[in-house]
Image (cartoon, rainbow, N blue to C red; front, top):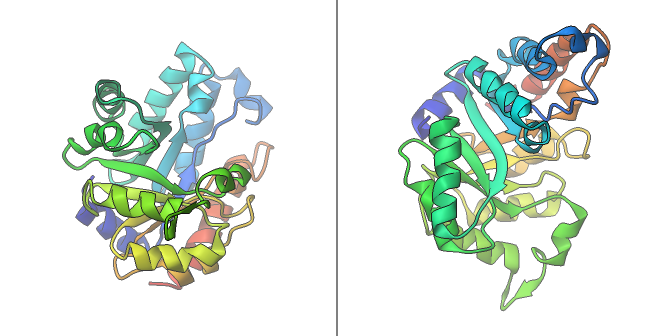
Length: 266
C-alpha cells in the first residue's frame, strides 16, 4: 500500500487506529478451542468487529512463531482475511547483515505479503536498506520506544544530541516518508512534539496507548499532521477487553470509542 492509499483510507474513516493482533493463545476465550484453528478464529472475529474503525492491523509475529508451523499458518490465514484496503504490519523487529535482511524482507513482503515490517536499526544502513527496495512497502524503524530499558541506550547523550535523535535523523536519510515510518512510544509524552518537529513528514507507529498508559489526545495533540501522520496501536485494550463469548462485541465497542476520540482531530 502506498502513502496516498493509506492517507485516503485514514481520512475516509477519520481514524488512525491500528489494532494489534497480539493473539496470545493463553488469553483467547476458552470456547474457541473447539475450533480447528483457535487463533485464526479469534483473529477473524476481532477483524470483523473492528474493521470499520481500524485503518491498520499489526500482527506481533512472536505470538505466532512461538506456536511453530501451526502459528505461521494462523498468521497467513489472518493476513489473507484482512480487507485489502487496510494497512498490514508484520511486527517482527528484524534487522541483520545485508544478505540476511534481504531474506527477511522477502519473507514479509513476498512470502507473506504484508505492507510493512518493523525493523531494528542497530546494525546500520545495510541492515535496513533491503527493506526499502520493494515498491509500496514500508520499513517501520524503531525510534523511541516506551519500555523501561529504552533508557539504557536511546536516551543516552551522543555528542550534542540524544542517541534516538541521531538514529531518527540518520535513518530518515536512507529513504523517504513514502517508505519509512518510525516507532514512537506514546508514553514518551514530553518527546512527542519534539520528534514531530524533527520529522514533520514521516508517519509514526505509536504503541503504548491504553494498557500501557498513553492516550489518544496527547498523541494527536502533539504529533497529528495535515496527512494525519499517525497509526496509533491498541492491542490488549481492544482484543482482550472481554474474555467471554461476547469478546467480539466488546472489541467493537472499544474500537469505536478510540475512533471517536481520533475523529476530533480531522
